[in-house]
Length: 297
Image (tube, rainbow, N blue to C red; front, side, top):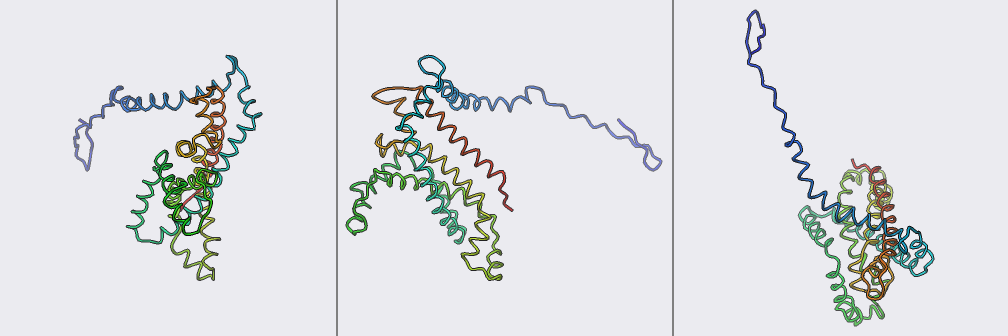
């Protein structure tokens, strides 16, 4: 009990019990729930990275830079990086432009339509790999349904899905849904009254988009482009299902070196993987730098 004098009277109050601190095992219990995640992350993320890092510097049982020297000296492997970067750049640029136009149009329709389109976009962003390649073969292959229709209409003559142009179309297709999902929240930073204010100042629609909207969206556009670039550089399943080993890409060469039917060189594959990882890390670092400086009011 504790007493206090109020207005000449001594009043007694029961002492409030001090809240007991939880036992040590209760405080550590949340950490135990993280243990399965730590184990999975270590086995499937950290362990492969360490294996790639160590084996990339191994040649003939000794520490060496021979694997990297072979990659740099080989026109074949240099071509694989060039083809991968070429596909990634073009598909990312085309996917970004189409997604920008689509997202801008989507923002002008009622909310229910927006929700339906975004739900479909989320589903489409997960449609990749072998099913996507099979769908493109059925539609745009040599005897695909769309190919035959366009050929009969005289719109195309010699379109070949199994070429650089076909791969750019394939890559662009799976880049568009991802770009829309990334750009959609960025349009929240555009105020509706900006268009009216720009019109009152005499700006035309193209001037409004060029001088008002695009500067606001620039951080999001650059960040989305970089994510699309990383997404395309690491693509493998759809390309391999469509082209097998007939197109020289880094991911296909890595697969051939560790699971090929002719020869196996896992250490050389580790060196290729490490170079690709460094490229992806650089791309991701630039993306994080852009995101850290973007502000949406």
